Length: 111
Length: 113
Image (cartoon, rainbow over all chains, first blue to last red; front, top):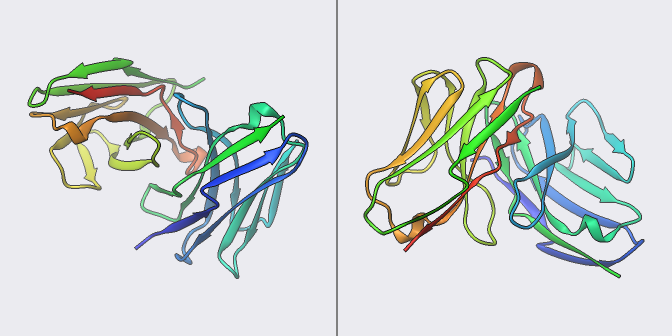
């Protein structure tokens, strides 16, 4: 069935460093790959997404890259700030009107 | 603009009691609607989704049920709650032109005692 693996489960970086979270999938029909940020006690918020016809997308300090051949996509956060601390979820969609989510990465940005 | 509401925000219920959580969407028509559950410190588990009035797809067999009595209303119910039903319940919506972009409601935090 549809499955997406997310790594690492926890990530600690120093303020100003970059953070990278990677997800791999197996379903070749997947064509939509969003990333969500969830702060403690709040709802997940869509922060960036990419479709299979695009290899990279940037929005200020965040970017997502997609490698369709290797079936993996990654979230890149540059110049990390304390407010970037949160749980990040990757997801994929490929039909069936639903998304499959990764297990989440707890990012901690230390001062 | 579109807005999604959930209520109640928090709920404490005893084991064996019934449950009814409500989700409504404003500013759009014919959305796809979703119910997720998130246990403490865990990921998002899709419970049900609906592509139209009266149409419900169940992802996980359990003691929960869902209904969609109106286009922009989605209800999650249970006849008898279990301790394992505790969690953060999130409703989400998406619409045709947005593709798969799902937007979440504020959630209901349920504690079963």
